[in-house]
Image (cartoon, rainbow, N blue to C red):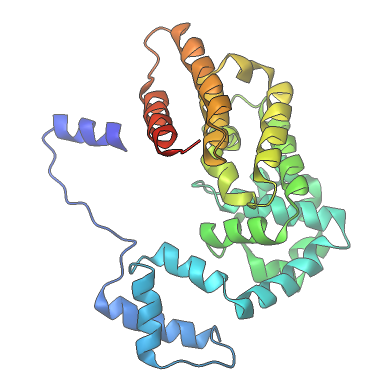
Length: 287
């Protein structure tokens, strides 16, 4: 986004930035009514002022509000019932469901052809696409495949899918995509499999470091050229930083810098940013 802004500035193009994630007063009232309509409150129906407190607690941001709603026990129970029916008895249904959730949380247009490429041809099985619970989560129309929202997809994977299965699926996706070179969308999707920001959204906090190490160690074996990619080592380092393992993170950042030196004109600002972050965190660490 920063680069795009520079391009616009160089062309003397004037524009205004709009915070579309921030709710206006009218939108807050509308959201409040929607909260009522989905039965979010269960047996405890609060006064309107309490609903506004929830909205203000989320800093009037739609994304944070959605996360708060999805964290309610009432909504969790509803989601668990639907997801359990999709992942417990049929391995193809499970793969189609979790792959669909993962694709729909990306900033790309997903069609049935892409889902078939990644999950398998069984996605066209009428038993899957006509399942009532599957249709509760996904919408297939005119060949396009959509879900409720990217935030919804992230929460479902993180809260209801076993992390070992999630890791296994991402590794499988990476292996399928590494040999596809004729599609920008597939390339972006493969890149998303490397990003720590993606992994962090769908891996639960329990055994987080163990899962991160397991994922990145297996990933570099499945996609061997990553060993020479500075960006890969940066992402791996960010995983250690998030878990407070600063010494190991520094080793991986040093490796990222070393790999970057072998590439003329490599953009190291992202590595510098994490290095600065690590210096600050280490200075605040009493140990």
